[in-house]
Amino acid sequence: MKLKYASKWIMALSATALLGACADGGSDDDSGNSSEESSGDFDTSKGITVVARDTASGTRGAFNEITGVLVEDGDTETDNTAQSAIIQSGTQGVITAVSEDVNGIGYISLGSLNDSVAGVMIDDVEPTHDTVADGSYPIARPFNMAYGEDLSPQAQEFWDFIFSAEGQAMVEEEGYIPVEPDAAEYEEAEGIEGTISLAGSTSVEPVATVISEAFKEIYPDVVFEISAPGSSAGITAAQDATADIGMASRELSEEEAANLTVEAIANDGIAVVVNNDNPLEGLTLDQVREIFTGEVTTWEEVME
Image: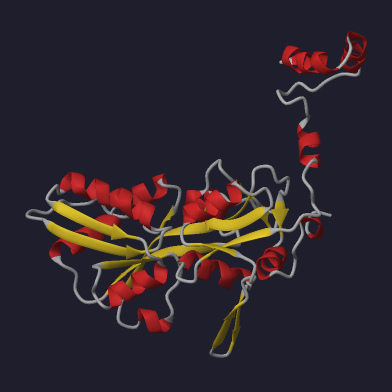
């Protein structure tokens, strides 16, 4: 790679100047810059681009409640998300927005974290499966499923499958924390067919889809209809029976849960994510709140 590095300089400099530059030493990486030099290129004086979820999102609800972006005063709740925030309707939208903006910061389900963005430490704790499981990572929430009146035979069978050893194993394989680690093995039934509808959280939808695909392998005459308009919409769908099962990536309020059967299928962390070219390693929970409420607006305020 040093030959490529040198060839660029030959085009612009004399042979003597080139030899002098090489004598000073060079980088071993492909770009000609050390990792420290690359990090130094990040302009901390730039404004922070806050990327948040829409108000129907359970991830937003849980994130705001845990971080203090949501302020409760008696029966009054005030969502103090920064007015300048870019709002995304789904997890992938947040990932895309942050990955394309070096100054972006957002939050996503830990189970959806991939190499497109970087998860940062919160209060010196990394966002991992283990830290969520042991309770040390501070931004975590349940994945809930809910239904109203009695489920159809096929939907009830699917519900039982979710909480079986097989269903909970899939929860763990997808990167989440199972709620029934000692669940019993699933026992197959006969004559299961028909449609099962699920609606709700974009964070819960991927793991629900994985479990539904395994269920269909057992019962090929079952058809799934799965949509992800957000946690609040999922709860409403369960309440008015427009879906068999509602999915929510947050706790339900007492009012929401009053006429529903609600069970957590998994626990999940919420990762605070930044662009891969951002050298930020961690934030305190207070700094997270200050960024997402707009109290802190530049990187130098949290990277001194």
